[in-house]
Image (cartoon, rainbow over the protein chains, first blue to last red):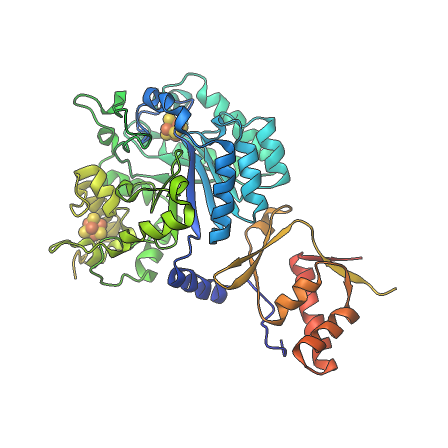
Length: 380
Length: 93
Ligand code: SF4
Ligand code: SF4
């Protein structure tokens, strides 16, 4: 424009510039909110942990009004990309109202759910104010497999009905799977199921230990899956097999290769190198603000302090320096690795002690992406 | 009668990191995956489009505010309104 404006922009150049700008100004642009940790299912691998103690803490969950004003604060602070998650977010009766409020504030909203509670109230608001994506958890192509994971009879049928309803309403739906020893034999079948429904599908191999309860702290968090000798991590699929499954479709191998080739990995002495606490945040059901779901050690109360002040305080995660000998912030495999210090902390009780499983999985991915041609440089 | 243009009702304009970002909140899913940024005089025109305006009114407003000649203002307004129409951010009647 001759008057000095470029008019309307939404192209890649603008987005790149804009991303730099929001990182430079530390705008909380991308966030997730866990409306509740309660769930109507009982997945064996769930990081929420013991549902009985979570239920006892239900009274500590933020009220509808408190969530409404927190959403106002998020919008004010610059959040655009928001995820509603849980637990099962649709267990809250006020889910439709909270979702609608976020949309009307001009946020772009994605919803993660288990698909079993998609009722008319939810569909009415989704039809009016469409989410960017509704991602539904699928744990097996066969009814028995899905329900061996959810430990909830009838959950497969209800999930499929929920997906059908979302699709009939013209919404964008995706399926996502946590890869486990229980469902690994159905990897291809789950992908075919998604194809037949015309929806996207992704699988995640990153099982991680239960998070601590984030209520008043009065309750322990030991669920059936983590007690005694067994652990959620026992469901991890061996690294070579997990990488082989991930690369069983050329498009996925290509995507990994592209990530490997195009992602910059600056050498830094910072411990946390992702966007958490820089442009990313997570809010738990009790109003705790963290840099991400897993970085539980940096929690501040957005209710007591207000969002802006809590956000200012959690910036301290960006100041943490890696101890001597920590290799991940100099590792060439970063673009192929799902590890991070917060996850390492949950798994090993120390953010600087990497998960051997995650590390080996990244190496297995690399072997597939490079056809064994190159040698990985774990530390530069 | 000259066509007048107006912002669609189902949009929210946000100010994030100094940029005006227009987010469609209803409508087709393809639109929802796009955000639009306005800057400089585009922002000024966008404000005017909160109520129905003709091309003529937009041109006068722009020429006045930015001290540019009339023909430049006309070119800018036409290009901008066409881009807005194509993106589905304004409607004409
Ligand atoms: S559906 Fe999700 S929140 Fe519910 S039990 Fe399963 S993993 Fe946990
Ligand atoms: S591949 Fe290993 S060393 Fe490299 S970032 Fe991942 S966990 Fe760290």
